[in-house]
Length: 355
Ligand SMILES: C=CC1=C(C)c2cc3[nH]c(cc4nc(cc5[nH]c(cc1n2)c(C)c5CCC(=O)O)C(CCC(=O)O)=C4C)c(C)c3C=C
Ligand SMILES: [Fe+2]
Ligand SMILES: [Fe+2]
Image (cartoon, rainbow, N blue to C red; front, side, top):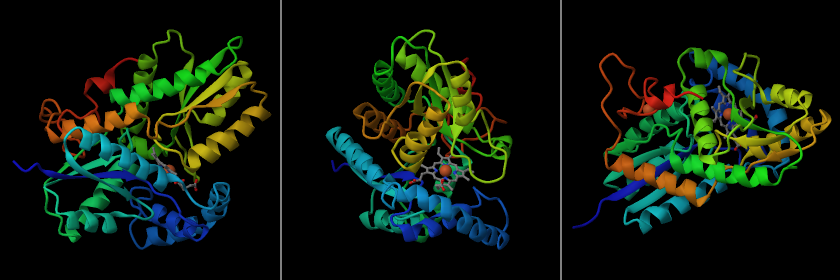
């Protein structure tokens, strides 16, 4: 029997590949209805204005990374590692990388996938926690591009995986190494830091914050240290709106007041980019120093950690086998990826488990 040819599409946000790309990248981001929910042509005008203003700050950020984002190269390494594990497991799988706001974007990738003529397409966002601003936006954009490309193969979607055991174990492994490097004579607090969201996005029902909390719980359980002093906080605020908190800035101030050293864990990013290499490694480290915090250790992202890549492979396998738990009872909100029993549904155990 000939085995099914599977295209696995990995989604991430994307980042500029040159200084000239910073402004158009930002324009694409702010012109997304999932980020700025205004009708056109108003959104286009606002996106032009904000991207022009933000480009000054962002260009400086990317200049510190040599003028471009390392996100694409990192994501390609993850795609390569996942493809290897899937093939070693006997699947005829080919991985593709699809970025939301800079190349390669949906139109180009959907055409490449259509040219492969796979028997099945598997969509895998590299966002463990679902947000309308990230996963839903990428999937909606993909669906349009896939239709234009004439991609007719059946498609399965991984919606989110906030408590995936491989993800939790890989973060816990990296956290354990970081904790071992701290001063054992000083008290330590772990700051689980996630990209923030405007409060009004969450008020509309976005499950992201409680999924971030669920990932944190899973990591703490996997670490297995009783009495770990830890907190979830949010970074990367942009724009004038009120964002969810506590902010990492506020948590650094509290850490300074409590005279604890800090270990910072990126809990919503699975790869290195401007928000980790500049914001966490330079900006917040400098802030911690200025506050007199004696120790500041940043845990690396899971990137190509083999346990994380195995976790992604398990997600692919389970999506292919159609596993996903019972269908939602009538009246319950449906998963945006139509995945029965998905952790994005608020009444599933992951949503209600105590901290
Ligand atoms: C968990 C992932 C992310 C969420 C949720 C998210 C929401 C969100 N982001 C912005 C605005 C910007 N984000 C920027 C960079 C950026 N964002 C994410 C992830 C999430 N964003 C990543 C991985 C990156 C890094 C890209 C890279 O460097 O390669 C930027 C650009 C950088 C900057 O100017 O600071 C902006 C702008 C909003 C407004 C938002 C929710 C509404
Ligand atoms: Fe962002
Ligand atoms: Fe879901």
